[in-house]
Amino acid sequence: MAGTDMEHAETSGVVTKVDPAEVPSAAFGWSGESRTTFKVAGVVVIVILLAMLFENQQHADTGWIGYIYLIGFAAVIAAILIRDAVTKNKPK
Image 1 (cartoon, rainbow, N blue to C red):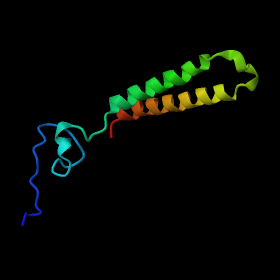
Image 2 (cartoon, rainbow, N blue to C red):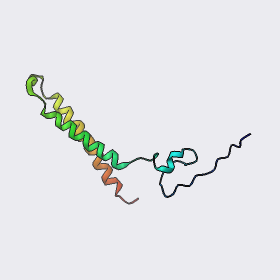
Image 3 (spheres, one colour):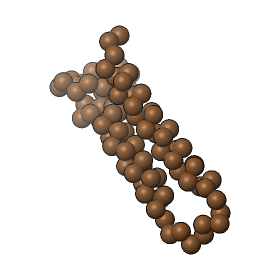
Image 4 (cartoon, one colour):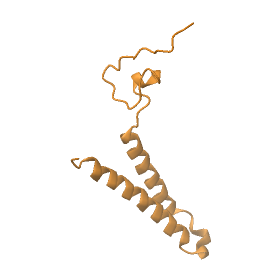
């Protein structure tokens, strides 16, 4: 019968919050969060939301509610990205 003890894998300098013995792909760095990826995705979403402001103006009688939501969501995402950049550099 096989034992229940597992050997701990060597991480080779990869920083991760999970045990590589439990998640083998953690040794390759696939289990961590990528802050840069989240920042780039946030900026891309902001650009897409603001690009929607320049849609075809055929239905101008609907008002400005849609534009307010687009600008509001873009502002919220921008605020989150700014807060992340400010709090990351603060000493603990």
